[in-house]
Length: 567
Image 1 (cartoon, rainbow, N blue to C red):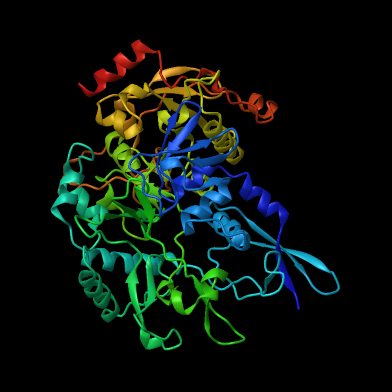
Image 2 (spheres, rainbow, N blue to C red; image 1 turned 90 degrees about the horizontal axis):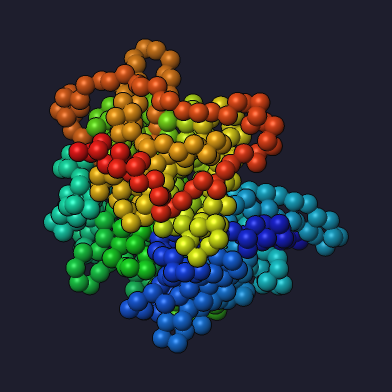
């Protein structure tokens, strides 16, 4: 009998991963307070009025102190365990590691061994643990060979199902007021093109929506966010006792949250993000990883978690099957004025002509930035989850890449360098990976006074612009609004596309009528200083000068100049 053992290399990669990146991917929020980060306890059973859990980047460890502490604390694996189950079960260590690897896009490597002691390695990116469980013997070390893990359906299927689902979902007044208020400033056309929708506020509405989907001929199997649960008193071996629902928790009072679609480079809605009412988890993925698998030997449904399986009858209401994990994909965003031109299935670089891409975090942050700057933006789910941006940069022919992350996460007042070294480590690695694509790509960072706005969207809504710093030369210059707005235009028809300005964000498109009124503008050449290619190669990758960065930018004259652009 052959067994699969999780390689020590994979375990080390997960242990050394950034805890804050995982927290962001799980929808948890945090803020810097001195040398630590403050957040709500990940334990779902611990309800804090104010965040009193602290994370120390220097040690990559967290500790809950709320109400004297609930016991939550430890490394990134412990954080995930507490967030998932409200406790740390050592028997599930390898399940935790694999699921964290799935969320953070870390390659999973196994070692297979048999009775003769022969070993061989196998690698793969695992999206779920639904079809694997701990073996009965030596369960903390080895895992029996199981069928391939559950994977989400292809992007075309997800796009079709999500669009039908969103069309059937309501828009509640409270959500519409938020979207169109001063914090977002979306229009009715923006909401329509972005497919923003409220989570149905009752199970009756959800049942009606899902019934509509199924009657339309759609299968919900392996569509992230949809799952099958066992009805009360049902038998898991009787297929008729399972019913389809969604994984979003409904509020007993008030609104339950809303959906934010995430698009890929050809305009498909590949996943949904959920804005919740929980201050500990403001944004979560619409995801439905199964927690049971069909055991081949007994031909029965069994829990992945040994503790649940031990008391199976007591935990039948917890069973979930039929769904799939969402993962954490990047969001490709264009200004809402360009949405009427973007037909599903068409690569974005065939719709717009651009060579500049802005990289930031968050769905709404990126959309607002794209709208205000008339730019192409990519929104990543956490500062460390940038690897999916790299092939996009290559395909789109990007010549200039702009890093525009939140100032409060980049800065660290009590640090000698004035920087958050953990976040900067990711930024440096991100920039180096971009340069590996081509030495001709210009990499810059945008900085601004944190008092003028935490994120790029806050800064732009406050009618201010950032200062641009070339990471090779250290040169600083104010960003010119007119230059940004003139860089993006519809791609020329019947001609090879030459990409010239790209930004990743979550913006909402304008109506076709508004598009007709928008004149086409020719791209303007930006005046930049580039380091010669020979010098870049000679530097062996140590070419980034972050010493010129200051989160509380003292370039007063530059800031005053940028303010005039909005006046």
